[in-house]
Image 1 (cartoon, one colour):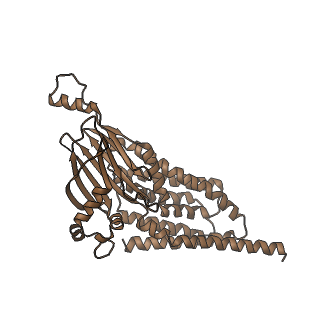
Image 2 (tube, one colour):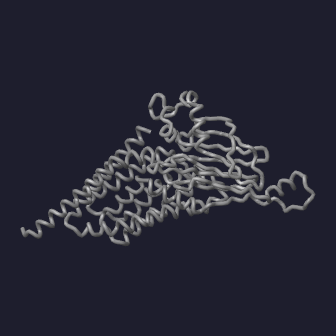
Image 3 (cartoon, helix red, strand yellow):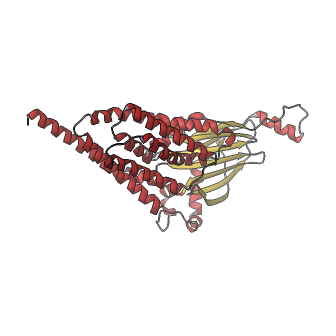
Length: 393
C-alpha cells in the first residue's frame, strides 16, 4: 500500500469519525428540544367594542413553568388546577407585566376577569382574560410582548387575532418584532353612528367584514416552523442520504411539498382532524422507516410515493400552529400560501446546501459506511421520539 493511499484512507476514516461525533453531539440537544419545546407559542385574541376592549392571552403551560418555576409545586412538569389556584396571584402578575397595552404611548391598566387552563389541540394553555377602557376610532392601540425577550435559545411567537367592529386582522410577533400597533379607523365609527341613528349624515352601507392579512408574518412563521421542526428536517435528511439521480431527488422534494400542502389546507379548514398525539407518533415512525430502508434495502425505487404518503401526515403536524389562530375561513388562502412558501424556502435552501455535500460523499469509498452510520443515528432519533410521543406525553 502506497503512502498516498494510506493517507487517503486515514483521512476518510477521520472524516467519517468527525461526522459521527457531530451527529452524536446533536443527540444530546435535538431530542429534548424537538420533542418538548421546539418553540414557545402564545395566542392573543383582542375584541374592540364601544364599551370596552377585551383581551384574552394564552400561553402554553410548559412555557409558564419555565418562566415561573415555583408554580409547579410538585415538580412533575404539569400545571395542575390546584397549583393554578394557589399561584394565581403570581401568574396574573407575570402575564400582566409581560404583555403591555398602550393607548397613544400611554400604558393602560388591566381589569382581570378570569384565569383558567384551556386545551388547544391536545396541548394545555394558561388563559388570562382582561379588559381595558374602550379604544375608539382614531385611537392607536399598541401591544408589546416581553416574554423571552432576552432568551435567544427559545423560539417564541405570539399569534394575534383582533376584531374591531367588524374588521378583523392578525399578526405574528417573533424575534425582535415584539410590538403590534393598530390605528382604529374612523369609517367604522361613521358606520356605527349610521346604524344607531345618532347622525343625520348619509353614510355608505356597512361593508362586508374585512380581513387584513400580514403575509410576511406568516412567511416568517412558516420558515421558523420548519427550522424548529427537527423531526421534519431529519425525515428529509433520511430521504436524501440514499444515492439517487437529480430527477429522483426532485420527485421526492416535490411530492413532499405537494403532500404537506394538501393536508395543511385540509386541517386548517377543519376537513381533516386527527389527534396530535397520533400525528406526532406517525411522524417519528416515518423517520425510523425511511432510515431503515436505507439500511436494509439493496434497491429503492419510487421513493417519491412513500414520501407523498408520509408527507400527508407531516402536513398535519405543520398545520397545528395555524389551527390555533382561528383565522376566518374566508381569508385563509393568503395565510396558507404565505405559510407554505416560508416552509418551502427553508426546505429548498437546505436541499441546495446538502445535495452537493452528499454528492461528494457518494463518490468516495466510504459512502456506504457513511450511509449506514447516519441511518442508524437517524433511527435512534426517530425511535426516541416515537417512544416519548407514545408513552410519555
